[in-house]
Image 1 (cartoon, protein in one colour):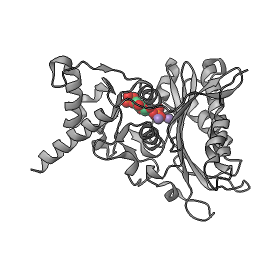
Image 2 (cartoon, rainbow, N blue to C red):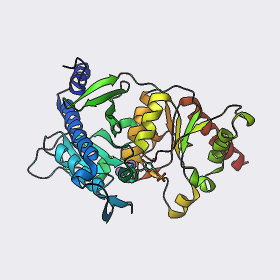
Image 3 (cartoon, rainbow, N blue to C red):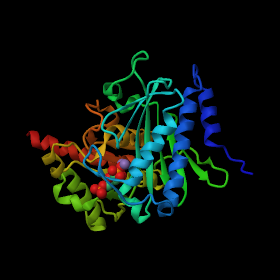
Length: 343
Ligand code: AHG
Ligand code: MN
Ligand code: MN
């Protein structure tokens, strides 16, 4: 018998403090938790159930879809379309929004998700995850259009991710701090194991895909160069580096022991006319909400991610997030650089 707090119990107790809460939100989170348990099981079984490998198709971003990208997207839709909490969903794997089908009750929330983050890692058995964000649906009950989703990250009601690693964990914020739950496979419940997660303000560990270095802007090149110069450089300290290529796993490491994660703007992206690698509505915003709630900072390099007014569903943004003092330093370097440019 476990004596821990289950995620359901935790959410119900948290919602008790909110006047006017109807139980709708609690129940929506429950359906998301169920979807993540199903995905955890699929990821865990892997080739035993034939889910690894490419699906031979491309998503709206022009990326090759893995079988699991498609399967996990379906799991999320099936788990969340029936109960009457949502008005529509949007996902990395679907070009258009997914309104709740006629014949099913329509609710007051919107859900955005990246059903499988880090999917390039799936075939090599490295951690992957699921990221989600919950928004209120504007308007009064009519079927929403894409425009309903174009809300700044500051409007998020809740955000979270599941990480399918050595343990499956769920990390969640509803705007009152960040809490982590570990899936006990024997009883099928997420148990509160990491209450009130906070990010150390200082760090000596950075994460960036350094193969893109020659394409970065000067402030990012300067920051990373200074880290690499270690005790001999201007920082006077040695830094460590990690790159997992699963944002979920990088953010989880940062929440656990601090660090800075960067997927900055680069000249290759500019040439393609895109503003970054990661997607604002289902990667940048939910992760920024979690990071800020844990005491960290999350910016594009120049501005706070959660204050960006989204212009379209699959918009991309540069991301620099993690331990406050390092992210602030990257912001300062961009400001210094931009100020010199204007002189
Ligand atoms: P996704 O698998 O959902 O497309 O996201 C992958 C993202 C992110 O998780 C990771 O940080 C980054 O892409 C890795 O990019 P590189 O392969 O360019 O390093
Ligand atoms: Mn992703
Ligand atoms: Mn994905």
